[in-house]
Image (tube, rainbow, N blue to C red):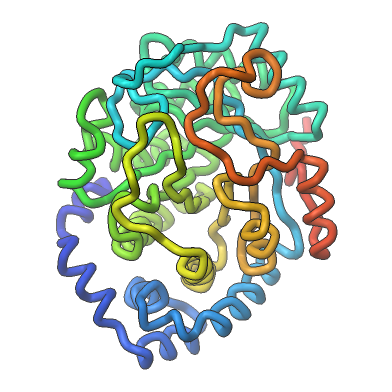
Length: 368
């Protein structure tokens, strides 16, 4: 069985109505439990939970410190290419966007990487558009082999691949893969992904299964907040995570919270989530799952990122550039989306320290 089979047993509209029907009593019951179910998660992300936000934040804070201590892991994205064969309504790299395309050469990859290394990073996330001919398995494998001797962890956010491709990359040193479903609303997914391999909803939703079977160390999940109702989309993310944790129990997992950001040729969000609702969502995730890593990118502004650390976020990017060569080799190339927190890594370190937390560059050491 793969997740798609479980997913197809659910009905979006029924789930959405159930979430919005949750009451204050349901929220209070969820908060007083020691182990929460998916029904409890529905209550915690429902409108009925907003009056309980302070209580949720305090509980999320305690649970995060119990499991992760007062630490925040830092990472940086390394954009290798803006080539893409997909047409997506929300991404600056979309195939129909008439922009200058760029793919880093091996020399440029190392120049970008050494800049990040000098900033202190040990965790890097390789990012490309989805262009299998230009930045396919061989290209990604070469990049991993170039970078693995210099970094503790090399993860990637690229096009979904077959299981054997993941096995090849894991052998080369790949640590983790982020694969966002964008939205679990199947009809709207088709609206936002009109051309290219990404338009295949079923193949994408089963990607974490292929990763789990390949033996990946870590899988990152998430939806793009703004495409559909964020509460319902996050319920399906929680359903997906619960399935994966039971099926591939040796794998670690993370959840990200990307809100739709401005980019070249971008649509306006269908649903706008305010900051209070994002805090609610982050707290709900921590209360629902004490083990999952919660990650925050530079999409969010300085004030929000400064204050969310104590509530439940355990990893964040710093000094990010979302264009290939953006750190050193081609700073003017087109970015995938606009960042909101443009502080340098050293400024982020100072901020984390000022909150009484410890910035972590590397969370484990390999012994040989």
